[in-house]
Length: 151
Image 1: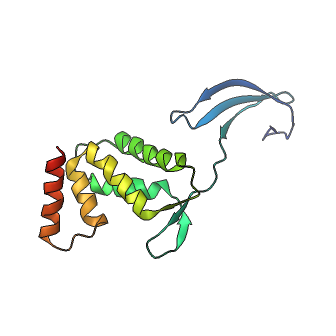
Image 2: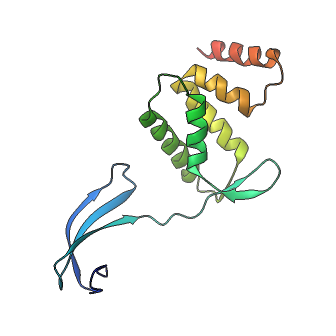
């Protein structure tokens, strides 16, 4: 690792530990030449995950889109941001562990609903009403009845 201050190639690691999310390693380094310290992060180089949308277009997977949708669904609900972060991470890991280079937006939506159902039922119904594009109260009622049956 090259020192960002003097450019020296020889540095030593003084401390290593996993980050809070467990997905990378934080390393404190010290330059052998100038003695200054700096921090580096080491992460796994993941292959890109491509989302195939309903119209057939493709785009790179964006975890923040899932998190934004979860935050909207859980607005004014007793769900912490930490719980939403954990849920978004769980969804991403599930998708990546399938080891498929492409995933459909439908699969992502269904996975979000499945996990959200266990977290908060009201947020689940909110998300489902937008995701499944409920057109009338009958469809909304059917979803609520389905939810009550699963209890």
